Length: 183
Image 1 (cartoon, one colour):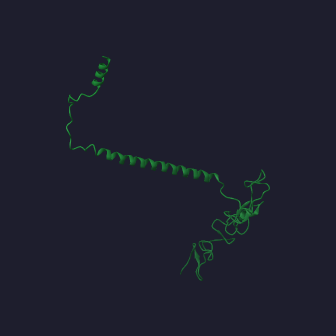
Image 2: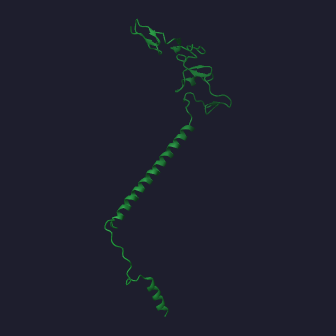
């Protein structure tokens, strides 16, 4: 009897094929079920492609930010090997107190990237072109003048430095308002 009960219970769970369920009428206007799986792989590939692109984009941004941080943490210039010394120097400083200045170390003005080869008031300058140290330290040009080859000139009327340093007007021409006259 126990066996019959379990068979009956198993039989009651199985679908009854003798009863007819309301059948759905086939709709020929809709896509056939065989076409639907073909779209799913394409969508999956597209989603994977977008995901990979997003990961690559984020890695690129991370690399750029890392490079930016590293560039800012490095020193802006490096002291030439001829200026380095094993005594008393520690990262561009002498001893504990003072910074390395050209009055104590004049060769520092000849390093690539220096403002000039000359030392004036503890600063590297070029006395050939510096308006505040024209020709020598401390010699200032007037407001309207330029320093050309170590001399203060009025580039608005000087026929040897017309408009800019080194711009010579032709023989017989004059410099008017920084332009050589062509009359």
